[in-house]
Image 1 (cartoon, rainbow, N blue to C red):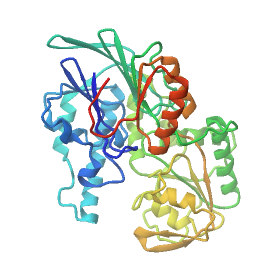
Image 2 (cartoon, rainbow, N blue to C red; image 1 turned 90 degrees about the horizontal axis):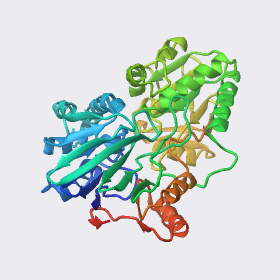
Image 3 (cartoon, rainbow, N blue to C red; image 1 turned 120 degrees about the vertical axis):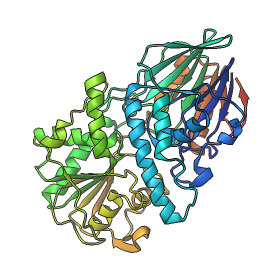
Length: 452
């Protein structure tokens, strides 16, 4: 087997791996880096421009794994795109939204080559999608090579899969993004068991030491208590969320908390792509039962669309709970605009429920939450920090120890590190070398061919 990590920045971003197995040329994921623009946001597809892809396998529908799929699929129209049923619905909606975002970026940054793909390219993706059920292997043949592909639920978000490839009795596993712990809307990962020859392992939380007193249940309870506290003091609560997965989970948490009288009844507002995705979640629930989310929750919570007339520094007109994207409070998003309204008012509270990149506005606000002011650059507005700011660890990724345990029990001869920054990869390199002395632990350089 030969492998190239096409993510040019050695961090979480434009995730994509090219592998050769016998006669097969396979691409796993085709992401888009959220912190870069233009070519720098894309995987290094130039490394495989002279190669004809046979298969593209998609693990899940977050844009760091999905966002450049129309580009590579258009260049390789013969390649089937293998993925789970939920992903076939969600991918198209996520990509259409991405086109709209890139059109806005074209105007903001003067990017003449944006958008990087058009709606007609998404139509081509739709024609090439091949649905594969979880835990049911499918055989693919090319020339004298036969491989079996098996998708395994990896938790994280609905539709997310770990990819198992079997060739000549050799097992190769791409972990994808993994969460072993169950969420309110989704069961935890069920990764392939037994001996694995080569494991390509995510390292997202490698730099984060787990806290023994924290788990998803305790952090959920702490979040519920904080929402109640903010409402009881007469304030409004902003919860920035990721559109895919986290918004729907927070809806369900809030619904259950309200039914058990743990949270006072208050108006709930929402905005962003996540509201539209709730309709897709309902379709997925009806057809697969892979997700525990009923869109009737939207009606039962009486969720309203976010009021449009937000102004920096001026408090919202109606006290309530605001569940809006983006989760990292990226500039120009509803959560960014709402934060500028709520932050200067002492009774309000901001509740972050997942990882915020340090370079995003959300990450900068969390890092400076004890400062006196925060600057909203896109609005040219400097706000006093009066509202409470809290972080609740409802991560969509497994802890580093859980992943290290999985790698060790797999008995893999080779472990290839992926999807993590330098500090995260360093922890895994060191820990796995100690725990798996007979294995080859590889932290691949971008665009370098590795023969495994």
